[in-house]
Length: 75
Image 1 (spheres, rainbow, N blue to C red):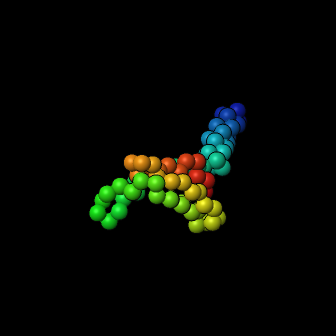
Image 2: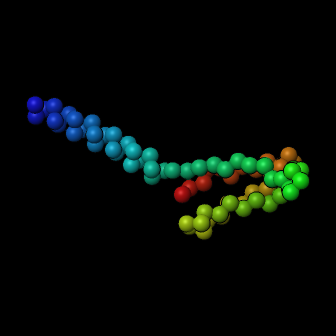
């Protein structure tokens, strides 16, 4: 019975440890298209993504089709 408890304890610790590790390296990506008020695309628009918690900025420019990509944003 005691060995079963020890095994279950290790299983639970392994599951919790994996979840904690996953939270440490959390990143995200924002993909979008810049359009004006009529819905027309806006090429070469300057885009700034700001993390309001840290005031960190990521700057990019939209493509000729109005698309932009802000990859690997951290929390």
